[in-house]
Length: 223
Image 1 (cartoon, rainbow, N blue to C red):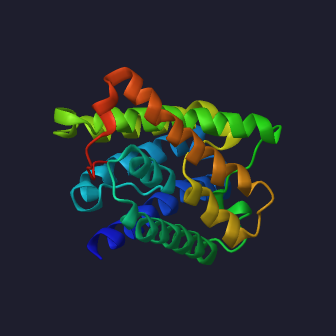
Image 2: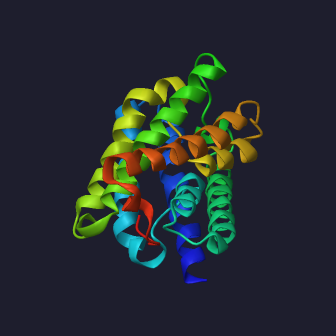
Image 3: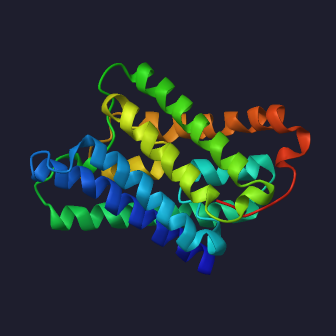
């Protein structure tokens, strides 16, 4: 129960702070700026890894949770509870943002700026890159100290910075699900539910190619 609550709380904070930054940027006519939004996402993930990593692993993302399970680092028995907690956290955060900003359009959701195929491929590649970092910094001695949080948070901020204007740089199905469901903008949600999962899973054979077949052999709960 502590692990599920940690996943609920962590996902709530990511969606509330990250999509909240988008909403407030719209409400204040660009005061936060796109760079500020990207940094918000990166910094909140960095902080949560250190806050919750020793409790639940600080996945806060169904693509990450299922990829760890596919890699053999996480028990499939725990996946439904983690994913349910992540969905609940995202919906709760978007619901609170709707209460606070009742006229906000989209609630910071992700929408493709161009063709759906363009955003789909971008989301696959972005999540692949992110998961490759996660798999590597959560292996062996590099789990210790400050490496994991900084590397993962920096990667999220970097990807949101350069790809956000085109595809939204979701890399997290529930980060897109919460705003879409609460705002009612569901037309492109399929992109953000499927592409991050595919990208995260593709990182597993790549990590094994880099580090050998034993790279993803041991079950862990690392972020």
